[in-house]
Length: 240
Length: 240
Image (cartoon, rainbow over all chains, first blue to last red; front, side, top):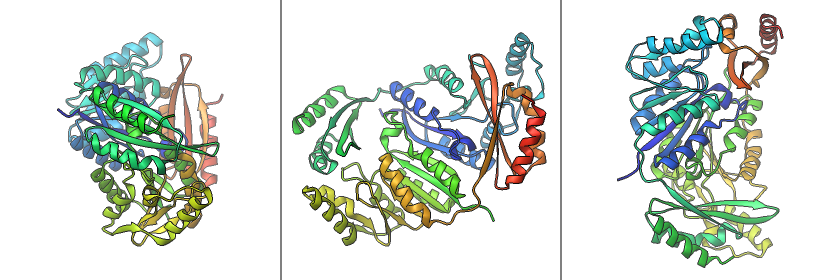
């Protein structure tokens, strides 16, 4: 059976303007690979209502799971929750359980639970909450879309809350070999290897360092014995 | 007049499996912002023919410029050029000028210009070449799509070859202020500021460090005097 597929949608002007470098995509890619869920696509869109709604609908229709990052805080530019509700054609409002979590948190801190902070208890109808052990304000899952914060340590904590509940497949195994020859010399034998192992994914990632051309060859697959066999043949083709 | 818009399409299994962290998106975002071209969307897709063709068509139709990264080398997993040709419904074959560049390069190096290396001279019909001062094998532009290598130093050199030929708009100016208060306290006054300056983009990027909550507020716009005025008001609202 093929593994479940996933996409990530990163929401935020700050990534697209080059001000901030996204790290959530890379973190999620690694976590999903371990769990046997294949990340097939990533998108970044700006804080724009139409762009967010269109991307959520397209990715939700095309993949088993969608993970979003960003735009669920208390400020005016946090429009993700409203856009998700619109994408699913459901209403959104302050929900009692989310409100109670936040009220208790701010009471403990002795901080006013003002209107801006109450915005973080707005949850689309029919969603389930995602626990946030870092800063309490919850994420939520609706349909196959998991809506999480953009701040990296909160995103990571929410991923840890969500992933154990998802059914994974066979983890993707990989082995790599560094070959200090130009890709042009590696390409012929490598194409033959790829043809002989159609169930494996064989990638070549070139580099140039200090004027030396080389490539890291990565062999990936779900069957460890096949990966081993292909890697043994590759190493035999290009002895160090 | 609004600025031209752009999208980037990063092609490669290695990003989605979490093996490699993409850096080309962040680099391009910064370069486009300087040039007054608004990066509106980024996508990452795997080395899959249907996924690449669909993304190229969608992004080409939706933006003034599309930049692609990855998949134009000599190995079997380099399928970008063929997919671009398919997306534009044109033929692809080895082109004399690209072939001559590569033949001269490998002759200088005393390296065989074999079949794999000749693959890098395959260019879709009607494209113009993008100069590659790092490793010679050219990128190409077809329609509004600029097709470039994934290796970061080659990608960066190709961006430097392409950008001067594109018409930019007014560069996006930005100023930022760090406020050591939780977003929940900042949100109300900030929403008012955003309402009073509808032509500016005002973003709030929260952080938590050593248990302290704060946010970096970034004000962006094309009119420097407006950005100044809004920043002065913001600083007055939250004296350090």
